[in-house]
Image (cartoon, rainbow, N blue to C red; front, top):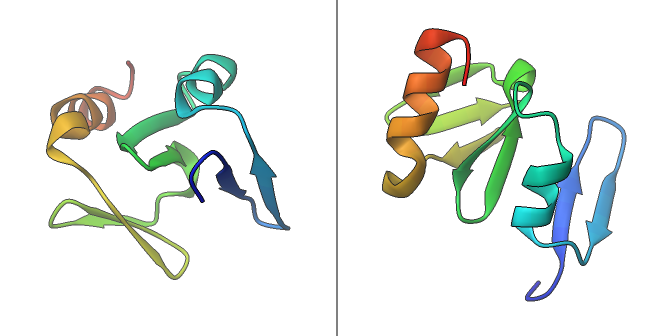
Length: 80
């Protein structure tokens, strides 16, 4: 979607022109984490993690090498 980001919530999908960096700065850091250049996830919505993929409902979200160490450190410590 080039210049737009799609935000998926439980109730709807929202399109925004905000950058991922802008979204990261506005979202609570203890509730959301960047896991890929194209994905930010809500920590409390993660159902499982297997082979560097996060399952949220029916979606499988990749954990990229760039964000892998920070993500796993965050979830193992319970803090950021």
